[in-house]
Amino acid sequence: MADFVLLYRGGGNMPDTEEGRTQAMDAWTSWFGSIGSAVKDGGNPFTEHAKHVRSDGSIGDVAASSLATGYSILQADSLDEATTLAKGCPVLHGGGEIEVYETFPVM
Image (cartoon, rainbow, N blue to C red; front, top):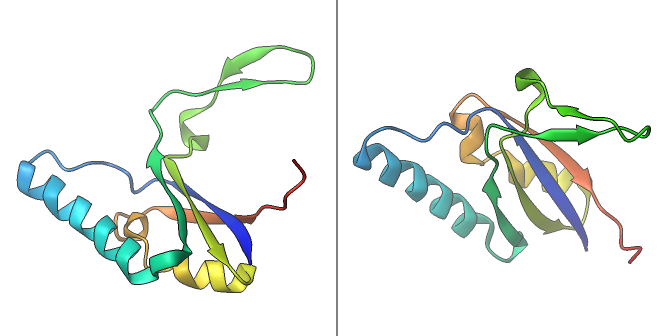
């Protein structure tokens, strides 16, 4: 079993109403419940501001079009399985996309 990072882009806007926020959180709770023990870290959303550090030491802002909106970490037997689990993620219902990365233990 390996760990997979789901990196979310878009689809992360929280509704303005209490009812909408409750529905959004219920969708996440439902999705996490449906994939059960595969959830290693439910993750969190990111703010709208990010920096990058280049190899020359320069620091700059990440372009708004490149911002990731959040992450989760799942455990699965393969990249294909992790990708299948990601298909139910609420980020997709909000028009977002998910990148799935396999990690490997080195530390």
